[in-house]
Image 1 (cartoon, rainbow, N blue to C red):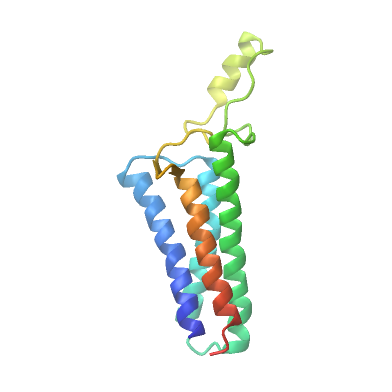
Image 2 (cartoon, rainbow, N blue to C red; image 1 turned 30 degrees about the vertical axis):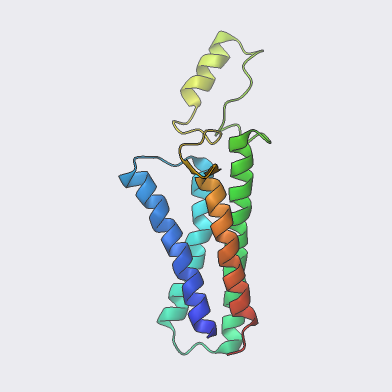
Length: 158
């Protein structure tokens, strides 16, 4: 049962990555800097699942730490998703390389430098949402669910 739960959770992360790539390439919604940050833990979690799949001889004592590492990856991307959602909603400021900074006291040269150095995709804009929740928010929700599956897998003894 433990192996199955690990594979389900890892497949969930792989599906999240496939969805993100679908939005990027099919939906033509390029990701911002924080969107990329959210992808890295999913890649790690999917890699852990691939490791378990390719090494069928791995036994219970070794699966537990792998499952906890998967849970850590899922919780990490969930945390980044919550942070990103807060930036999108204006609850707090995001990285200055990813959002617009204050322009009140800038000279025209500094303003032009900020404009020319700004990324094409801003982290504080919501390109898509469903039921009032942005992609970053849905990533957080789904990743919390995946973290629960990873934790159940870690605590499973069969």
